[in-house]
Amino acid sequence: MNRRAFRVGLVAVLLLTAAAASGCGSRRVKVQGRLEQDGKPLQVSPDDQVFLVLSCPAGEGRRESSNAVVNRDGTFTVYGPEGGGVTPGQYAITLRVTPSIYAATAQKAQAGEKFANAFSDASTTPLRCELTASTKEVVIDVGRKSATAR
Image (cartoon, rainbow, N blue to C red; front, top):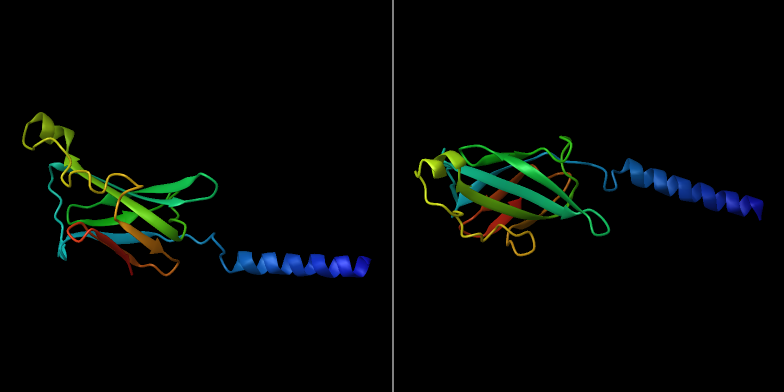
């Protein structure tokens, strides 16, 4: 009986070690991407602030969320919660483009969100995609209301 318990324990340890070595949920990926409108690059005005957040379920009632750094040419990078990338999984993407405080104060821009809050709620945004360890880029097309991981 002791020998059988030892074998079962050894098999369990080996299986857990193999799962850990294969990156079972622990591998992270730094995501780069671009914003488009109907297939064309979305240019971000110097008077706009862009809030782009990727969020994914991360266990019982928890979510992992990561902000993106968006450039004026619409390209972005998501570094992850601690700079080491994001966990692979199914992501909801929220996006808000609003006038910067400086533009609003100078009344250079109309107040309000550029896309009428179509992408601002994680539970209703149509921008969703699956990120894997092999994901190199995410293309978010606001005109087509889609997000594609490549």
